[in-house]
Image (cartoon, rainbow, N blue to C red; front, top):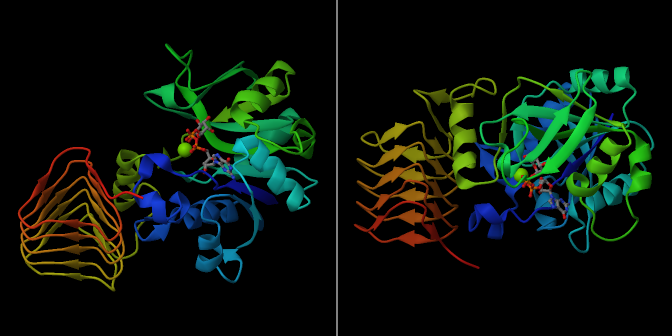
Length: 338
Ligand code: GDD
Ligand code: MG
């Protein structure tokens, strides 16, 4: 089976990290998001995927020069301008010559969703498109989906204002018949959530199925950190090399007097004496000097946290930035610009 992976978004909520790196190439416990997504699809029989790209596309080609990610053969469909989700699906599917049942994935989600069960459900219902659903506490920043007892979608409301009718949201994995492509204009922007799904629901051709899989949209600093912490805790399968709730890349150096609590230390990082890292992620090449304290924060590639500086919660330090020794950055600070 073939899949279209949507990876064209600019990742604005994860800036400044996403100024240099597209969201789907950010590692979660050492493995880029895109590899985690494709590994799960491969487990369910997806052999080919077309990556729908617009933002920083050359970085994917550089990262995967042999055109394989997690065992899946990938091709690239690069948009000249953002086409929005449906425009992107149409462009990529046509580029790849898709003419059979296919899968679509929002590339920023970490999940171990049972895709085989979703495909079987889609076929049993004779659906034109089927959406995976996931229950969340606050559905307001997602697509909210109501269905009848058979799973036929009654309404699809993207990011509802006010009270949502259910806590089941669009989990960003779809099974589609090629007939959906006929509804997507050949050029220009179009949204699958605001245009295609409501139209298919009105025609009675859209189905949805809830699942109890692990699921998280990694689009914000807080959810990106949560995805790392969850994977450390083994929620998405065991982590090779994780000990005492943290993970350290073998090519990093952590001083024996430093403390890691649910922390991720990626390749070529250096953590100095008596530093304290808690529920935080160090991206490749980050340096934490002696005695610095980092809590619930993300330290970008090659950034330096000076000695005895204190950081957090939910600070994001961009690539190559420097936090001065002895300084303190409190909640929600973003360091680094364009
Ligand atoms: N190629 C391309 N072109 N991809 C795009 C574009 C575009 O113009 N715009 C967005 N994408 C990609 C993003 O990279 C992401 O992988 C996916 O499409 C969804 O876009 P987001 O910007 O992450 O949307 P969201 O998180 O606010 O909402 C979406 O995901 C939720 C689940 O995580 C919607 O599909 C919601 O309905 C859903 O609940
Ligand atoms: Mg998202």
